Amino acid sequence: MRAGVRLAFDVGKVRVGVARCDADAILAVPLTTLHRDRYGADLEEAADLVSDLDAVEVIVGLPRSMSGGSSRSTQDARRWAGELAGLIAPVPVRLVDERLSTVTAHRELHESGRREKSFRSVVDQAAAVVILEQALATERSTHAPAGEAAAPTQRGRQ
Image 1 (cartoon, rainbow, N blue to C red):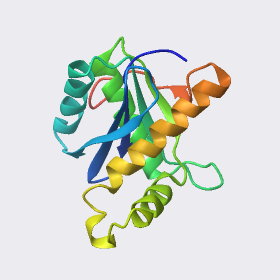
Image 2: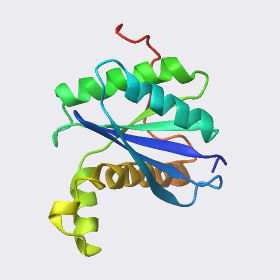
Image 3: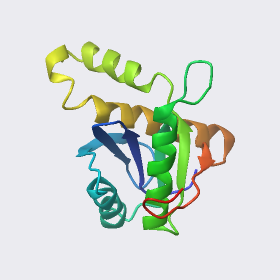
């Protein structure tokens, strides 16, 4: 298992949940929620987090349909990941299948005693934790980074 802090992002239409792991890549914890911005402020904030935490890798959840197909959300996550990769190079950005991460996050929040009304403020962070835990588990079992590399792009270009 490679050492180093990793950040995970659960990209939604309105919010982006963020989680991080410790330098030993053992424990994933919620970090913050970014608010999507059509001018790219969320991407700049994400890039700042990567720099401030000296992250060695970024994981972005890739929302696929249950059949594995693409949707608008899939395309949006790919675009967001590519733009972030362009901002933080040479730090790698990897896209990891996030099917059921939000469902898992809702279940875990409910089981922890949280009420449904209070989920909105933390569910995106909890989903990012699930995505990061899955990526770390995959790396532990395969000895290779999880998911696929995101191709760096410039904002507004694909």
